[in-house]
Amino acid sequence: MTIATSPKRNFVPQQLDASDWAQLEPLHRALLDREIDSVQALEKWLADFSELMCVMFEYRMRREIELSCHVDNKELERRFFQFVEEIEPKSRPLTFEMFKKYLASPFRSQLTDKKFRILDRIWQAEVDIFREENIPLQTEETKLVNEFDKLNGAMIIHFRGKDYTPQQMAKFLEEPDRATRQESWQLTNQRRLQDREALDSIFDSLLSLRQKIATNAGFADFRAYKWIDKKRFDYTPEDCARFAESVARHVVPLVDELDRKRAKDLGLDRLRPWDLSVDPKNRPALKPFDAANTDDFITRTKQIFARLSPQLGAQFESLRTNHNLDLDSRKGKRPGGYQANLDEVRQPFIFMNAAGLHRDVETLLHEGGHAFHSMHVTEANVFLRQPTEEFCEVASMAMELFAEEHLDVFYSPADAARAKRKHLEGIIRILPWIAAIDQFQGWLYTHPRHTRDQRTQQWLDLDRQFGSKVDWSGYEDVRRAYWQRQLHLYHVPFYYIEYGIAQLGALQLWMKSKEDPRAALSNYRAALKLGGTRSIPDLFSAAGIQFDFSEKTLRPLMAAVSDELEQTEDERSRIKDEL
Image (spheres, rainbow, N blue to C red):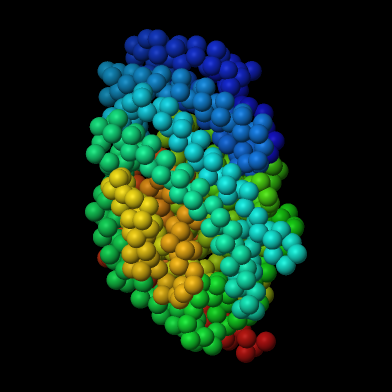
């Protein structure tokens, strides 16, 4: 990653060092002390406040990206935590005072654009939950999450004469040879279990810290606190519970049917955990690109975006030009993938761990959708650029679905049909996992004094309700600790139901695209441009879809995916016959 030239600043000095509080504090104080005597003065104050935050947000994000890419680098760790431990604890109380200054301004009512009512609601929530005594606890939380990252970044599995990261090992689970799959699965999970105790200890500490944060803010539990912190104004925990019930009723049976077909196709009496990723016809794994050549991976993905829209293709190419992509998997790199906003230069950055799998294609399309969201937003105020995750994930998941008709960029027609089916099956399979993780989090934080044994039992109960009916015999310890694979539980508590809400939104866009692809893409892009200036229901409406994740919406969408799976299988068979 290279540092782009900062745009011209109006309030923050061009050469400011964002790691130096002596340079930052006078800017905070100047904003707090400034007299606001008109609506125009309030607008100028908001612009200057936004500019200062852009500079600080980008500095922090660049340090976090560096550390994500090299979790074993002590100097990068020092630079990141210098900001977290020295700058943020001093900035947050003053930022809180600025929220209060804005909310107390008599000129606020003269800001007529309805986006300011969104800002009112967001900043009022921030004021309601802010407690200065929580700042050192949040710093400690960040340090614990980094310990989780370091443990995961150090995981290496020695398999058949070579060393692999857990992400790289995933490719062996797609091998037709069952012995290879079993051996690779066993070795990977044995390595994970070596850190089970350490991961449990980190999680225990996080639970304790988060409960203290909630208590300090006057909440009975961390879920209640986090609901306000995440600005969940438009739905409740009860809505999430009803979503889980609908998934159990309408989606889990679809997964069970897919598993029955899979077992039959593989000629197995029972499925084992290492049988879930291999092609159900036991064909060799899809090979979309060489993991050692991520540049080719980028070029092919760009072709898909360019087919959808030349502008999208050009925007994606700018990520490569600006060196804002880190895609390969390697030792010393944290797991997972994400898209990050560099707020001052207004560029997105994509981080992931590619291993040459079809899942990597889906991930880059997904993170590309997030990047397009960032690049489409026209709003100047940084606090209103990004909506909450419920719509952010529509941007990414809808892009995965829009791209399905262009997978021939990576595959033959037969393999493209196969990849499409794999994606649609994945949508069905992920919804029960989403429901399980969300309900697990709800239990964890509303039972803050639970023991590790109780936590394990709750996970097993949810896994039986929502999990695939595979045979775990002999690997019960792996099953008990399987939740530790979900990094959201450590990094971003309560960030997961958003994937379920957004998946239903993305499926609605997908269905509309089958009728009129240009109109669907146009509505999608129009909604992206709004950023966070509208409520979640209004953003869904701008995209031409409904904000609803109840049974009323879920049931017909699952029927549509099931129908598409049948058609895709028929199409694959036709192509095979022609060949």
